[in-house]
Length: 262
Ligand SMILES: [Zn+2]
Image (tube, rainbow, N blue to C red; front, side):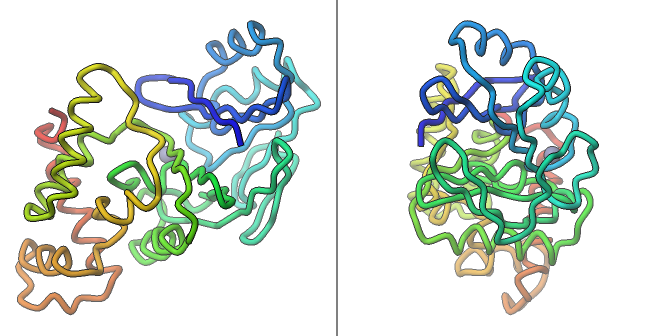
């Protein structure tokens, strides 16, 4: 599957799947840079894949449909937008660029959130980020934990196309959460170097995320022990949703200070 990225808004990514002149776009948060690129390349927009309802992932849809009224619009069955043509549930499959994408329901960041994947790619919106995960705005820690573990259960080492470039702050937090993990430290240093020269850190590989993203192994030692210590619980035998919630709260507190951004 051919995928290219387009920077949008302040730190969003719009993903463009191309098959010769046909394209499908994931989470078009704005339309103008995309329509310009479509014109330049004489592309035909066949479909729009939405991961969730947030403005910064959907704001470009109506402008795109004005130009390409025949394009399909895919979204989760809980996404409430009148332009959706295909409401998707866990286990549904869609045909995109000559390939099949599977649908996973991944509530937590929002209740309507879904992800799309096959054995090469994962489009995970604001559920999983490179080095981190989305904030829990609408769902519960239990839902977000289950959603992240669903993504971890994908066996293929897929390319992870997430919705934002937050990788440096995420890896700075990962080093704090797991100071003795040399793989995390090496990735943080690489991400810092890439960020300094404006090189995107997304997509990443899922295997890299499994090893170096704390939000994909909060239930495993030594991270689970570090989380328990950080929140003042003597025993690391906390249930995964509790471990997730404490890890997320730990990062939220540091995010608020701004110190993770450099
Ligand atoms: Zn969002």
